[in-house]
Image (tube, rainbow over all chains, first blue to last red; front, top):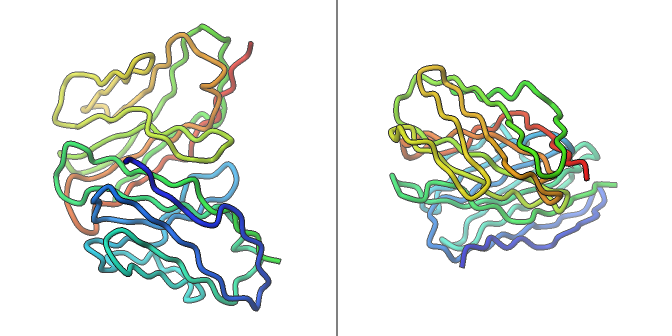
Length: 115
Length: 117
């Protein structure tokens, strides 16, 4: 199984709503990532979890709150977002240590629209 | 900090022909990985090919091959016998072999490849 599954695929939310994005992988990867991607741009790293602990926060506003409940699951809680937060949110996972398979595997993303 | 540069925003290729996508990078590390990812309109980022910096031999995967020049810090992707399904945005990416905070991917700006029938 080389899949990273993200739900939902599409999400429309108001600026006062609270919602969550979910990401799941069963490849035994111990590094998981959230990226934000605008159209025709590269993904921008938001958060990295390594062994279920937050290892990188790229100065992301507190209206985005990540959570890693276990080694297979990664959530991104959203609250009081702004229209400029509308984007494709990608989850990825990878091995942490020196490995024969260092590549990150990506999910299909959640297309988020903030109205 | 590492940087990845893709200076061509768009390229076009005739179906069945060969195209080369350019990528340069800057790093002070000697041990790292380089990747090419493809992102079609379906939006999922798909790994095309991987190169370990310690390997001198250029990686190949079917119609895809790279020209890795470590001293010049260059990592180009050659697509042979281009197919309509190759049309996508292609990203060059770098990852350190160190663990922890350096395990993140650094992406170039990407290049949009179109394939003419």
